[in-house]
Length: 79
Image (cartoon, rainbow, N blue to C red; front, side):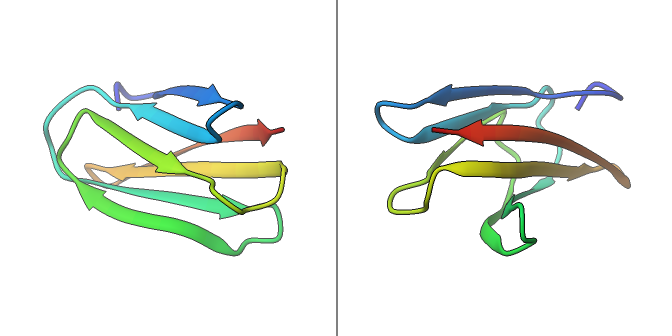
């Protein structure tokens, strides 16, 4: 997280989300639905993380990244 954002790449054909974050520090990544249900939750030090939405319904999701005591969130519309 470069003090503001991270990159999201959504592939609607495969229903996958690729999350790119600078740095090799430990980070927590949370994928949650609009209702607040946590769909995926991982802790990693990798620069790239992939989530598969699989059978989760189309709709609005939030991807949150916690790193170095800071929280960053982006909205994703899955279709």
